[in-house]
Length: 66
Image (cartoon, rainbow, N blue to C red):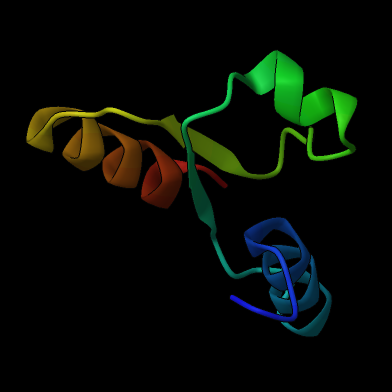
């Protein structure tokens, strides 16, 4: 996205619709993302590369969270 990062988009979506569940996909580790201010427990991080089963588990886990 030329004008915004995926993290910034997720923050905007969360501000507009706090109940919206968001899954981020990244090749960076959770530790690296946290160093750049992208660490919060209210979102799910799916690390690349991932399998179909990994994607399904991440979606299920995210949908089941309160």
